[in-house]
Amino acid sequence: MRIKPALYGALVVGIFAGTIAIAGAAGAWQTTGRTASGTGSSDGTGAGSSAALTGQTTTEIKGWMAIGDVSIAWNIPLAEILAAFDLPADTAPETALKDLESDLFSVSSVRDWLDAHARDAATPTGSAAP
Image (tube, rainbow, N blue to C red):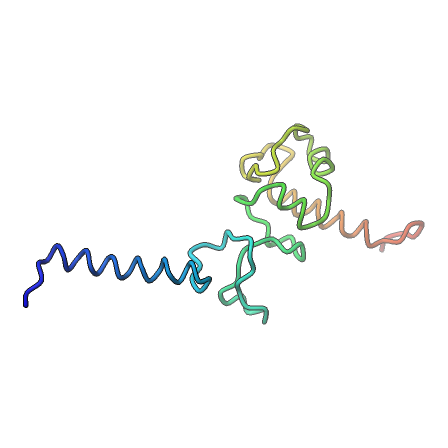
């Protein structure tokens, strides 16, 4: 039995795409790190890890991430972040960090600000920081 080339090509592409679709629906395939669920390893190797924000280290912040996600992950009110960088108070939480870039605001400045904010929160009231 001979299969026509066009049918064979469609069959191969269908099997390939179907496998990815089924694996993705089952949670066994991740095509991007931009997810909200942590499906990666927890052993610290980063193998298969998700790029979802955890609020543990500022190095995980990327320009495509939403400012509202940063607010939630670090448990800091969005209004406080917006005020710190002189951004409009009506900025939507789903706005990507890269879309807000200005002289006062960048991904690295957000990282620095969050690090300083964490140090200030860890310093007991009335004591001097080292």
